Image 1 (cartoon, rainbow, N blue to C red):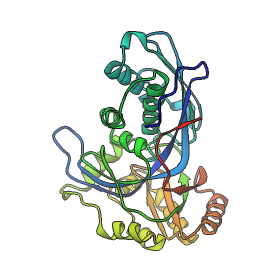
Image 2 (image 1 turned 90 degrees about the horizontal axis):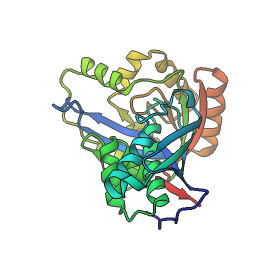
Image 3 (image 1 turned 90 degrees about the vertical axis):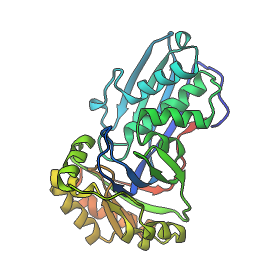
Length: 309
């Protein structure tokens, strides 16, 4: 973690990227309700920003602007607020700490891109710096794992292999920069609903493992090999719940993508392009056909949560 900043009236600002699951292999439902995962996270240059300001002791509030602001909760169920409270309770003199959080969102809500997790990770880092707490990166990641499966990766960024329920992350050996086109869906998809449909469609899932072909492609930096190896066990469930997504995936491949998949639990369609010019052409074509609510380009991998100085 970067050196903590002293408290200032202007607060602390953190930028956090979205993620794509290059591989998402899902095992049988555990007794605690979670599914064991073998996944490859990939952080891309689509960012939320979290601004943390001092507030009265034990006062935690949040305001949201930008993408999906109208559906983001503003109470203690907001993951950024939960993160700030958890940090204060665990590592600070709780009765003397408070935070006013502002989220500037570019990552869609309930889109399979871990926007909520990004906000939680951003709040952890921002508040640790705002309050000048002596918290190690390892301790922050432990708190992140308590908050949600994708939050630790939002702190780490880059390309990483996730296990457990996704919260155990280690950096992956990966070369090159990849160019993505993201097609945002009309409305979100509930992650619990997608997992329930996965359970119904997959009565006997096997223990999950990351495909060797995908890891080899990352080591060589070959986008075509990576595109051929993309895999998501939740995709059939997402397509079953939102059948029109199949048409979106087919259109992207027809327009020249070298790989396509639903990111996470969806409904965002992620298309891998062979190059930056190819990504520009693909984005123009997808925008013109109107199948997606919005189309954005993003490169990866990028770093995880970082202070904005």
